[in-house]
Amino acid sequence: MSRRTRNLSIVIAVLVLAAVELAYQYQRPRVACVLVNNQSSEPIDGLTITCDTSSAGVRRILAGESVKLYLAGGGNQVLVLKYSHKGSALQGFQVAGFDLAAMSRERSRLVINIRSNEFERYQEEDEPSWLRRAGAGFVHWLESSLESP
Image 1: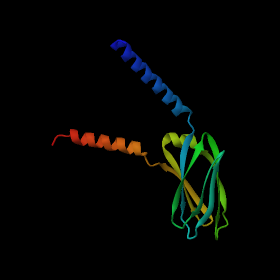
Image 2: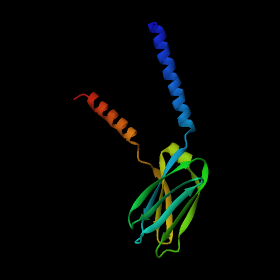
Image 3: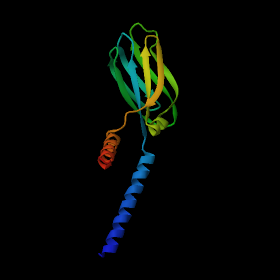
Image 4: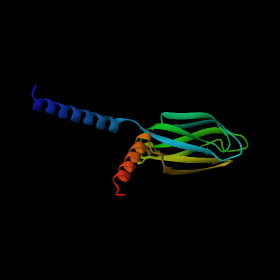
């Protein structure tokens, strides 16, 4: 095999792998984070979060603690939370217009603060992945090493 044929084969293989990766990233189910904070004086028991066919749960969230739950799916859905909370009339609620795919694209998460007989929800930027942190650290190191003393 000549050098030109070998190099052409390598370039074609890299392009095919890049196309396969792009197709996978486009087709994969989107995953979004829901952060639930217990801001009451009593623990929350049996928390389950359901969005379309995806669901996640946790047995107990102690007072003042939080938990991250991840759901997969896409499109505008209704997020349903069910739990038991001693001394609270509120035992669950629904969040309409929860868009998992948009949150995944924007790298944000839904934060839900649960108090006695009330809840609060808002969206915030999610923590970066270890790969993004490593890349940012490398760029910072590179910039600092290129600066003149």
